[in-house]
Amino acid sequence: MSRSDRAVRVLGGYLWPIESVVDRPEVPLSRWRLYEISAAWSGAPTLHLVGWANETAQGQVSSPVHHVDPASRLCVTRSGRRYRLIGQPGHCDDAGFVWGAWKQLNGAQQERDLTDVLWLLLEGATTGGHGA
Image 1 (spheres, helix red, strand yellow):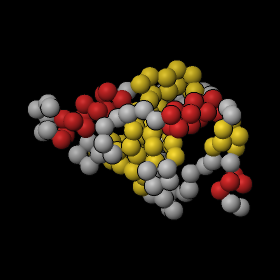
Image 2: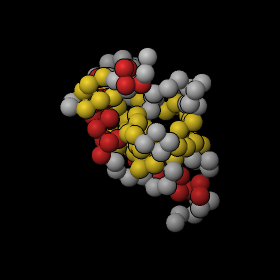
Image 3: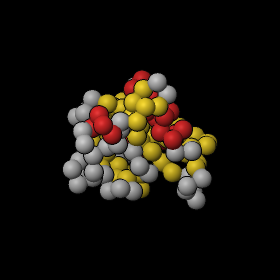
């Protein structure tokens, strides 16, 4: 089955599942953001990275983030995938579309943008905690 055979049509566009963690253990992510959502399937709010996956040239949403290493700029998700945050946070229309569709498909209710909090954490690790 090809990748296009697995595509799902949503909101006037298409989404498809990411490769397995074994096949793609790390994803460089630029123009990224961090969101906290509440959903019926989770007993507690979960954190998700949203951004531009450089290697595949498409928007991407992570599974729940479980660990952040500010020094290496790596975030590890529940699935075990590592997201390497490239550059500063930003906006990407494609990633925004994927995020909107992902929230709808996953029954996300409340959303909170925590990008600034993560950015401060990353900047603190870069500057040794002394600010920019």
